[in-house]
Image 1 (cartoon, rainbow, N blue to C red):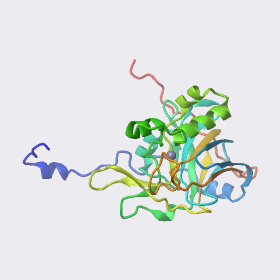
Image 2: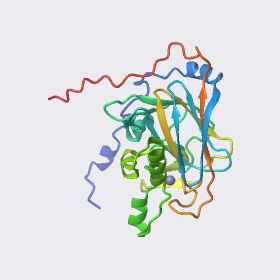
Image 3: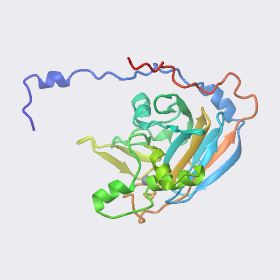
Length: 281
Ligand SMILES: [Zn+2]
């Protein structure tokens, strides 16, 4: 460890400044979404089998309900603009704008150069959890996704049911892509229902058993036409390990709910980011 300077304490005492202060973003019209959601009826659904993934298309203005129908299980979610796979969920910027974990009122943003809300979280049955004594919380945008490369790096073994591979297979099947092409579109996820944090002493990424139980759900209002792909993680509730067949796993559900006609008066699908794109050239 390097020697501390004589003014180390003073340097550490600099006040933290929120990089993106609360209030900088235009708040989503949550009342409008709530009224629309109250009229919504299910129009499509898919079951995500354990240690596998599934895809579903979600028209803008619809609600995507991510559900836990049977038992504790976490999901790894990828979002794409339906007609342009190059516009995808940007977990890093979502984290910078909203925090390490997301809940009702937060938005899921797309990558550059689009940078617009792809979805807004309008209901979260686990919002009661808050931040626990270990610093853990649910629905993180800090983890990436379990993947066979890191698993091989750490264990020397091959495992084919990591979320990365599950997402690759489901995207390939839905979009009609070769697996190696589909894999290039798979990106860092929203860890649905997963309970994670950073250890207080060393800042190390940790997971703990998810508080999710049968009947819990996370509802996303689709701001643009979406293709949602979700993996039911081989870690199950991620209370012990992932990237293996040892954990108890359960299915997840994805349901598309459509509000009654006229309930979204005044709402428009957001346009692509307004930056002119000059980059100083
Ligand atoms: Zn996983």
